[in-house]
Length: 138
Image (cartoon, rainbow, N blue to C red; front, side):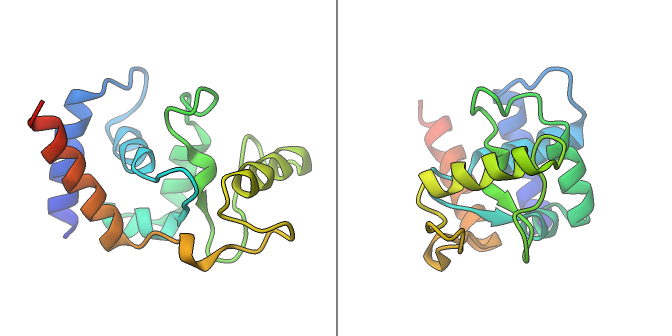
């Protein structure tokens, strides 16, 4: 599945210019763009899709220049056992990430994850596939 995902992501990278970023960052950002409003996934799921480590995914998202305009919604990527990082990992920015996730419905008022909102690698694969099919039909 990894080679298929990288191939699909590379097609989408050609369609969506992400200037000032590395090839690896672009792959992470394209997958992150696939996460719909109200859903989340983990650094580990994205790492599995790209055959890399969760830490590498986190480092790419830490440098995300497109998060403020919502183009690459990195707040929708969390650690398996914590919210993960967000804009420098201080208490204020982590709180902002939690509030964003809560406002999108992927967390409740006590910041518990809504388990129905987790995206697996298979679901992301399907979203990528459909994105390419829809893009190529236009």
